[in-house]
Length: 542
Image 1 (cartoon, rainbow, N blue to C red):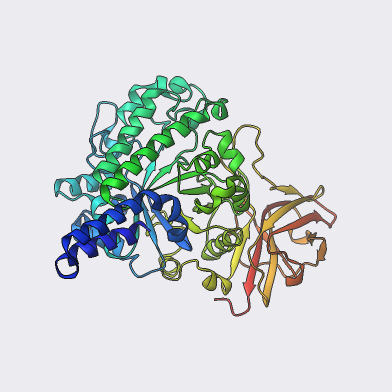
Image 2: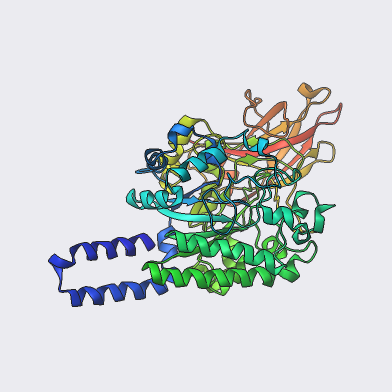
């Protein structure tokens, strides 16, 4: 919607001398400006319908390219790879603790301060390449926003609200002086306990809120995006430990103030500036950690929510329908764009595996069946932090995740867990399962193919008599006999060393949650199930 209104405004201005008298042009522009004041409440659902969003993080471009690519041509080429593809939105992240441009409100990533060891910065291209662009007078975010619009892609900025990469090493070049000099403002003051989450800044302190609000103001003044995202999932902990729900109104007030700023700048820019928030995958977990996306939506403070995991794992069971139920009538004006991460991990200590294209397709199919307006990919950038090979990445961005395309694709639905929940809140862990006792788990899938195959894949840990192990399973109460083992263990997590396959009749499946029970049927040493997934392969799947 923002792009449509802006393009209409530009077209009118360009044609004003040949189309209408200036008085009529002024009236049209006033009408368009008036429309921008209501568009965020009315236009987000239409503009996000079937949207395909890719997040570009704060370091990837600079760290994954050479100095020779730090040119206007190099900046434009980054955007151009997504032109005329299925990608509809680029969410551009300009910061962690520091900015990847010459900021007026916080240090640039290349600044050297007395609080750091400059040698650590020499191990990555990021600071040097970002500085090189600045020295050439090139602003990557302004360039990318303009180029994206030129290529028909909606540009947003995505601000990391509390990034604590590598905080155990206090002299790392990524850390800001504000963070380093004010350990009393950490969630656990001076960081003697609580791990890395304890060293995140605490928004209960006014100084922390103002430090970050200053950067919000700078981004909106300096740049002209279609929207601003508040990325509360980098790193997902922002308030006093144990008091997050109680202190949640503090974050709500912060979002309220950001909303006022986006409305002001929308009026100045002459087009909507939408506001989005990345929050924990479950609405109750989000509220319990103070990131109350339901309240924010009900108050009209945000236009879009991105329920998602942090990074430890992906979540293939994000309850989109529950989000919409909680939003009530506001579900008609707030888009839901569930986010997929790089990894799938079966439990917090289990070995992860990178998501494949069939994992993306499974996630998207389930999410769309549950009512998602858009699909959001995090850590799916064009190199380095890309879970799939370059050839598969091109297939992904060119073909996308639209319903018609997904119907014919192989899909995977791994069993994972929720990695960002309040203390005492269930994280959905169902693995590993000891074979003697057995266990149960749920797998949500989207549409069931009318023809093709379905199978449950179970990965076993290394153990004595592994080759002789026999498991018995049911799917939605139907007993499912075992088939041949899966010969290729690639793509399985949990350190699985054997993969048992159970072909499931399509008629036994539900296009929602499917209940799978499993138990060891063989004598001998006990086996451990460390990986579980459903695979759907429509007839003729690519």
